[in-house]
Length: 481
Ligand code: FAD
Ligand code: 2HG
Ligand code: ZN
Image (cartoon, rainbow, N blue to C red):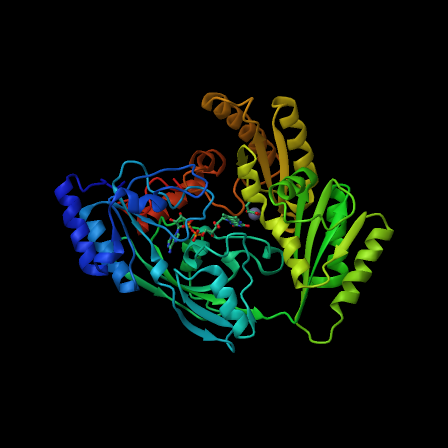
């Protein structure tokens, strides 16, 4: 692992001076107050310390920054939009790391609508990439609640998922090439724009989901898709998750891959979001145990998507698969429905001490998973509330456990409760053949759980890969392993 110095104030100052020579005086922060927002995650769960925070402008500057930090033997923590869920972008509290932020590297280097690719720098904000693609009559499909602030480098490093995985896959399926600065300062130019390349190991896949532990991603080639000409959002009320799966199955057979999103939410989560966002209104007349947020899109001009969706939902209502449904009449109504879906994280945080799981199980096992978790948590921790939201079509459910502030008044009591809830969710996840992290990653939150649940042979290979790229352990120390 990193020896983690500058050991003295002098050494730190020498290092900061060298970094300023590379990126300019204004692009290195070292004062505690100035670094603050880079040392704490947005949920305020992790607080770290750093020698400085540096903002390079180009791949060459990143390479020089990495070389200088490697020579000084200090850790390097890449940080994008700092919207991650697992504390992966926050340095450890020992203060022996440099935070490197590619946010100034935000150029679209190339867009090739014929090749359906876009080459972008790591600091581009996801929403900007979506807009540039749309301006070129193309779609970049990754869509997350944090899209206004997360960066594409962070999306790649976390293998982000979100609401359109059902149709387009996670980040792992959306990248053709990567450029990265390796821990010894060398630049790896893997910016391939090829859809077929069968020349051995696929190195870019190692960087996707590497959470800053193998190098700093500086640019990526993204896959683009045809821009939909019609897009509709619906909200359906459903009695249970077996029926939600039946609805998904029916829509899939009737509408094919025009279904791009199929998200579910439990009633208590839905009510919590509305309570915390008084401007949002429930689009349905009566409360329902479960809701499905549905989006269908079509690229073919003239195809009557609305009629197809209406017919499909009407048949679902008639057969009792859904109890109510509404199709947004315009873009504003559609946006209001998606606001409900995308407001869960903030509503949960505002509601008390909460933890959120990121489980995936085979899609068919989701109803069993939720039923077992619900029963086991209610029996073991009767005073907590358990909410559910997630990406049903991907088998990825977020179990959100909210601990009331009055019962869990001390940190010890809260920690015990969290341990008990985690053990329950993990036990059921593993028994159903699931994963403890579907889309958020490992960061620092899940290091212990990765070692607990990943087969030892896989951990051995992962460690060998880490040692191959980063034998001195300077890239994002304490994350993943
Ligand atoms: P950061 O948080 O800055 O970093 C995350 C990790 O990537 C860290 O380990 C960091 O070291 C590394 N990293 C960042 N940039 C680079 C780089 N250039 N090179 C190498 N490593 C790098 N996530 C989902 O998957 N699905 C969701 O639906 C979803 N919804 C969210 C909703 C909200 C409201 C919020 C706040 C977050 C949500 N997230 C979701 C989590 C988060 O937005 C994603 O993990 C996102 O991909 C992180 O991007 P970032 O730029 O903020 O990365
Ligand atoms: C989502 O699906 C995100 O909205 C975040 O992955 C979920 O807050 C959460 O746990
Ligand atoms: Zn999610």
